[in-house]
Length: 252
Image (cartoon, rainbow, N blue to C red; front, side, top):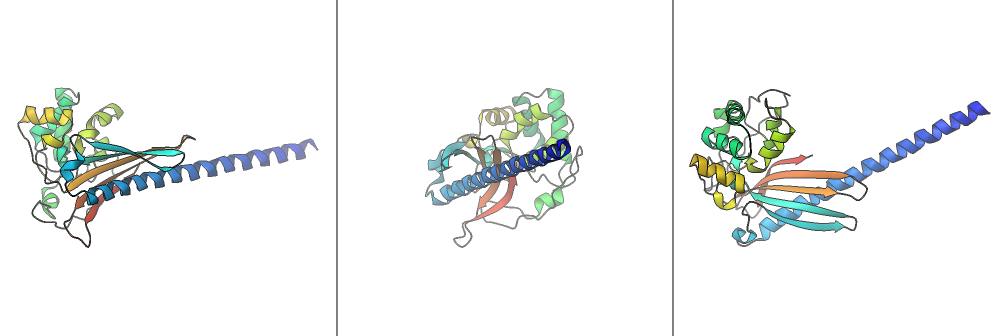
């Protein structure tokens, strides 16, 4: 009887654990779906704005959605050209930005050299996008070599986490002002945050936004503790049949 009771108790504990795991997985999936809904709402806002200047994207434009009674979705839209493009920015701008966010001069130099080394000029120049037209984006494989410098152009800004000397603190400091989506060498101070504006001043390398490229982040936290975030980068195409094109879509 004792053995049978222990067996039943063990089975009940296992069933309870599996039920909790299933509930957690469902909650995480729900949070991810809500985050993606936030991205889509931001895209709709970009497409429906007659004058994108009205969005006041200086630094970033943020808003909160409630598509579910129990969850809020925090959405941020940034003009990509108010950030520093890892594939296009010259070394002085990259280095100035790293210093502006608090890296030491030596660490800033190491970061800059690693970013430059991670580029391939041939791939970067193919499929060039410019304000005068919408070209084909290069279909490059995602580099997934941990603790190594990628040998292809930067696919997402989070790829810098693989670089030597970039820990959680450095990553958190650097990410807000970086992009892979503008495809211009400078950064437009009008749409930049404080650290990017400082880097532009230090380097003397301003840019001008073409108002076609945008980075969007949507973050969700459910009351039960499940969290999710989705990042997307897109270009507006000036094509009524396909008014935008997703450059990358990343769940984290």
